[in-house]
Amino acid sequence: MRVSRYLGIWVVAGVLIADGRAGSPSEKINRIVDFDEDGVTITSNFEGGRLNAVTSGGEGVFTATIAPEVRPMSNDQSWYAFKISSQSKRRVSVALTYTDGKSHLFAPRISHDRRTWELLPETSISKASDGRGVVLRLDVGPEPLWVSAQELFTESDFNEWIDGLAKKPFIATAQIGESTQGRPIRKMEITEAPPDAPLVVVLGRQHPPEVTGTLGLQAFVETIAGDSALAQSFRKQYRVLVMPLANPDGVNAGHWRFNVNGVDINRDWGSFEQKEDVVLRDEILRARSVAKEQMPFFIDYHSTRKDVFYPRPDVKSKKPDSELEEPDRFMRKWLARVKTLTPGRTVPIEVSPATRDKKLNATTWMRDLGAASVTHEFAHDTDREVIRKAGEADAVALMELLPRESASRLGD
Ligand SMILES: [Zn+2]
Image (tube, rainbow, N blue to C red):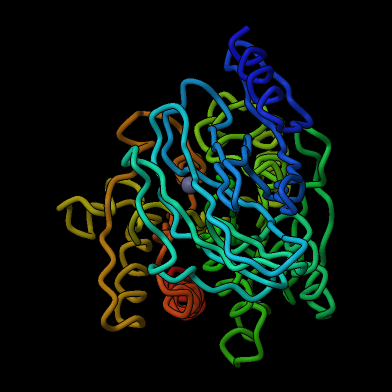
């Protein structure tokens, strides 16, 4: 009832809202705005787009409403993305107003071509009178201006990236299943090794707004797929299974956290009630079986308010190495090597929120299967070049240490 009343208010306010569906019990909010008034067009009708309403105050002053995908919403990653154009060149102001007591989080990024992005200058942003939103001053014209919480990197971008990499003879791609809404979930396999070689697993984008995690994952994967002698040697000994887009429905819908069922798919790695997790799990188990249960390493890329590593708790405990199980001992070595490869970058190693909540996330589940496992989180605003170097270091540390580790084990 409440959602349809909101819908009515917004329609009366002169807003066309498409795809308005109310879910129960979570009251899913999954709407698209197509606004055209006062010579100005504002739309969120594209992959990753998100605004829930727009109203005009006249004279180039607009108010955009942004709501989370479920109520109540526990998460604060208040994603927005829209495209704005005007019949004539002019300066407009767009207030971003957040519902449900939520606040503005992401510094706006703008693009004229959806590929190259820059931060909107701070001089073009002021705090809204409610203390939670912001007012953006935007120079617009007939060519569309993209305004987004982060660089847009959605399903079509993943496809382009995957298909580009797959031109290399040692990278194969396949669809491993479908999301809740029937979108393909794809994998890459990078290897020049025999089919039963040990398996490394890389996962990304369980959470829709976490674009910096994707940037780290891309650097990791491209380093393993690179031309260095280290990478060539590594690929002859290991298979690398990459599933870079775990939650395509949520990413394309501009969600803050969840899949289209309003579920955090990184808290479902025990109950496996969501289609996405079942697809990912089945692929991992299939590949692990082919690898004769050898699965030495797993990394899951995310974003949050700071750069941080979440390994399993034993890794950061005071236990001496000799008392650790082998995957945790290896994780300690890997984290130490990553640190030396990224001088000047101090990244804390912490116990993950999922672990504190006693919920099974991918990293816990993979550690239980015997893999040295870690979640690598990047802050939303970490410098993009720093992210690239960090993702490269993750890969280099792995390629340096894993073969050495295996060799010493064979010698035992
Ligand atoms: Zn996340």
